[in-house]
Structure formats: structure tokens, C-alpha cells
Length: 289
Image (cartoon, rainbow, N blue to C red; front, top):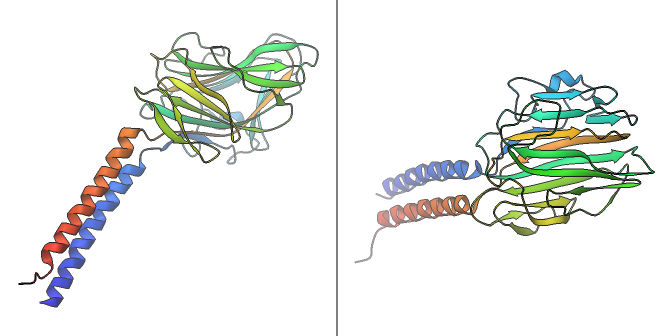
């Protein structure tokens, strides 16, 4: 009898553990990476290796277009993507990701590193370049004017640079030639949600707002987006100021942020499975008379 009971307990435990693992796998699917690229596969290019009409998403994410008109340039060099402008001649360089991000995501952490150098030391150039996210973008070598969820402007400030959002809020100035890890958190849901910030704390972001972090410092806090009716499917970068400068990117990672309803569903599923397992075990145990 004891052997039968033990075998039954082991069997129930195994079946329950499989179910718990299945629930855990489903739970872990939230917060997944939807795009990533660190330029390590072809660290010195060519650029064409990072372009496709049907682009990969991760781990070797590609863009639908990466282009530049002379004298601006774009190259893959030493494991980074480098956009250069040698002088004041009007020209444009850009990348476009128009194949929709999987989901599409309604919450997103957009991470990358950026290094700005070689800019005009005599004049400021506001919105020298832009990063845009939204939907329905084209592969054209130009800024998007429709479908934009939010635009972050890269402003050249003689000996420094900073980011400005669509409503004019600015980050602190950053030194030229310094690589900065940037994290932008987008909330395109109906509710405020918590996320784990780059400094390890738990922070909250309101519906249709963004948080922006430089390293472990939050530099923009719950700033409203410009196009809350648009989706988070497409990416764009455009450098079209008629001014010298170099903008270097690396370590792109776009990851969905687990939403409160998903966290609660995962916790609830695990709790139900544990409870079911305990009931089965107790039902098999001998009862005192």
C-alpha cells in the first residue's frame, strides 16, 4: 500500500510539475525580446547584411532600409552602426524598420547605446536627427509625418548634445564622444504599469507616456506622446541636418514590458496549480479514525 501511495504521489507530482512548467513558460513569454542587434555577426559590414525585405527580428535583427545620400554616410564599423556627416552640405541618412514588430507590442522597452561626436562647435542645431516609433512608416529616406507615436529629437549643442521629446522636454546635456546607454519605456495601454528600471528600482509609467533613462538616471519622466492613436510597430532614425557630426549606435534591444493583467494571470495560474497539487496529495494521505 505504501509503495502504491508513493508511486501515486510521484506521478501526481510529475504531472503537476509539467503543468507548472507549462504555465511558467507561458508566463515568461511576456516581456519577450521583439528586436535585437549588436552588430557582432558582421562587425565591419557590409551594411547590406543588415537589410532585408523580410527582416529578422532577433537575435540578428535587420532593417528594411539603411541608406544615405552623399555626402552623408552610413557604415558598420567595429561592431557599431555609424552615421556620418562631414560638412554643411544638405543630405540625409536613415534607417527604417517597417516590418511590424511582433504583437504588435502595447508596452515596450527600447534600448540602445548612442555616441555623438564631431558636431559644429559654433552653432546649435536643434533636431539635427530624430528617432521615431509608430506605424505605417515607409522606407523613404525622410522623417515620418504620419503614424508617429512619438519622436525623440537629437539636438546638437556646440560642445554637447541632448534629447528632446515631442513636447519640448529635454534631457540633461551629454558630453561629446561619450557612449550613453539609453532606455525608453513606452506605455501604449489603458493602465499605468510598473517596470524594472535600469537602476534596479520599480518605477511606474502612465498610459501613452514615456520614461527615458540615460544609464541608471531617469531624464524624462511620464512625458505624454504625440500620437497616442498610433501603434508601436515601426522604427525610424533620420539624420538630415546640414551640419557636420557623427552619430554611432549599438546594442539595440526592444523588449515588451509585462503588463499588470499578465503578471496577475501568471501568478493566479501558478497559485491554482499549486493548490490543485496539494489537494491531490492530501486526498491520498491516510486519515486518522
